[in-house]
Length: 527
Ligand code: FAE
Image (cartoon, rainbow, N blue to C red):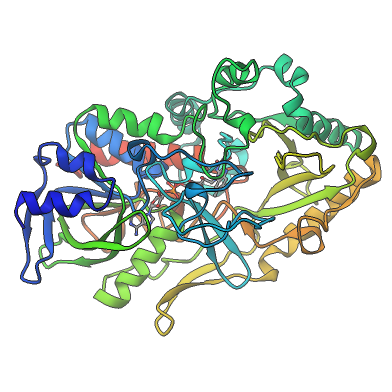
């Protein structure tokens, strides 16, 4: 394929176009195979542009390495397409679905589009993930929570805890632009009534609350409140992307990595499977799609070094599928030690119905949490979550994060040709007990009922925003994320964490990625 044809093919895809207009990336050599597939050689490939991928890209690019990143989702910034909000879901609302896929109230029809939010459905659990350049950072609530030191130590006994709390977590806070809402603003702002009510009710019930840091720029938020800038958090934008205010990865790590001139991001490029070659290099079969999910072209990428950062489910799917179709070597523990980070959604109805409930106007950015982790019988942390429905529904929403006493396992079903998850009610039994205890105690002190309005029986045991594990650090990989049985393959994403970290996970995923890539570079793994 000559360059002209290459560009022609690329234009069909709307995005990816910016890349093709630039001088062909010096680290990439392109040609065609006999079946007219374009073949591209790139020394270092990263699959996925979420937290693990963005950290790896930045540190490698800073050390002078040329890196190509493949992302199946859209580059929203480059595309110029705005994100939609929760009251008017549009293009960004779902990954190739005909209806919205929020955890509840899916009454909106959609034209299939490569949107930001995807849901993977298994028998007993639904897993939500972000798609697009920036991965989960595009759709998440921005809660930037550092795990409890004692729990981090318990989950990662072989890591130097002090080093993480003195070096990696502070570094990550700085890079992700973590900040905290001003107390006076929180006290005065009508959009945070749900947090004030949630905290007052928690105190009355005898629970301890904590302020939760976030990557949303609270100075911007104060300006949006004063109508000095366009509204985002106050315009029900979050799980379908934020047009303003949120420091997602495209505005932090990825932006810095691109500024080095050493990174090329190819969006709408989905890696199908991987083959290990005799010379220990890798060959990836990749589909480039258009914005409606139609295949534009099939491509082949060859690389010497491969970093998988496709998120827990994406990375596991690639490894397990490649094992079946290409005899790709995988460690026997791959897929094991999977967990939902103890996610358990629940809620309460009839919350202060006579005094304006939880508020008709709600910010989408959570800033409060209830910390019951030290309770030996019912240890949990819960987010006081917003429910921005454009009217007061006198309902409180909570995402509990529990310990994961019984782990699950991800494996591959050869007949159905898809990954399956060994996970059922027995895995969430203790989480349900904690949720029941919490709701009862809150209702007893404050009134209200378990929220049948939101979930079947008021319990969303099947809601998972935090899939973790399956490629556990030090078990399936070496101490820095290099896969056992491989010389040139690394995993740097949520799958390194063994199923639980006790708080919202992206700060930990980012810190572990920083730690791993620093040491991999120091060991000259990418020379
Ligand atoms: P991730 O960010 O998922 O990135 C993986 C990327 O790889 C994605 O962009 C994929 O599109 C891409 N990809 C996958 N497969 C392929 C393939 N075959 N070819 C090419 N590209 C591929 O991975 N966490 C918090 O700490 N605080 C929060 O407030 C919070 N809120 C959340 C709210 C929602 C609605 C959701 C869904 C998640 C939330 N999370 C939150 C979880 C957090 O976003 C998640 O743990 C991280 O994004 C995971 O980071 P990874 O680097 O593992």
